[in-house]
Amino acid sequence: MDAARVETRLTAVLSGWAAGSVVLGAVLAARPATRGFGRQTAAWGAVDGVIAAVGARNRRRRGPTDPARLRRVLLVNAGLDVGYLAAGAALLRSDRWRGDGAAVLVQGAFLLLLDGTAAAALPRATAG
Image 1 (cartoon, one colour):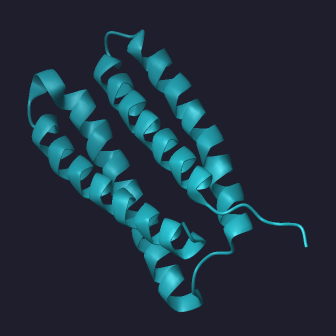
Image 2: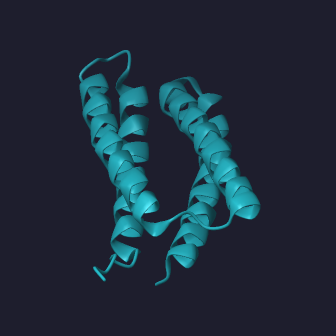
């Protein structure tokens, strides 16, 4: 798949995930039993939405991101995603933060899958 298409699909998927996270998070945050999970889910959704919107705006203004640069960004993000998974796992150990930790794990796992899949779909640079 060409890099521009990968980038467009990446932004669309992230936008959809963000919207769903904000809506679901808001619903879950209203219930005491799921407040922590909902709060984290909504917050991550809002941040993901901003990231997707900025990416779409930059692509409209500047054109597609250079494939090598996009791959580097995605791989750095994947490293951060692993950190989110570790943070979520640490939060799970606390009764007070268990819901927050579960949400961080869900968000980190999704983002790792998204970033890894997008990086793998980018065409490899050829020496020439």
